[in-house]
Image (cartoon, rainbow, N blue to C red; front, side):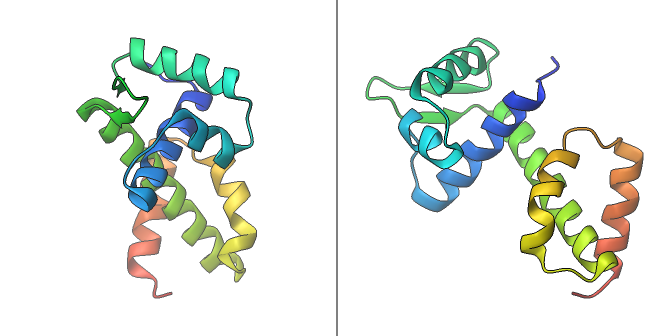
Length: 124
């Protein structure tokens, strides 16, 4: 199943918020992304229907195994692209974060693997 860029962004955000806070609710996602609560609610419904997340009776959001795998893959791409851009362009990672966020969704797997090889071989 193909998840759209916005769905990938939500999955990545859920993963990051869970790692940071230990739990995630829709309001946390809305605040993190500066999106409206209805937009986040709609997206959570789509991700739930696609089997990427579950929501309990008090609104706690959890990634399913499939959702976690996808979120971790996206987050790895984000971190790798950020590191690659920072190291090759000699820029502070804070300057490359936004570009990496956009690139992580469109970069081919082959190009990503080459970037990953470079980052793994090149010291910070």
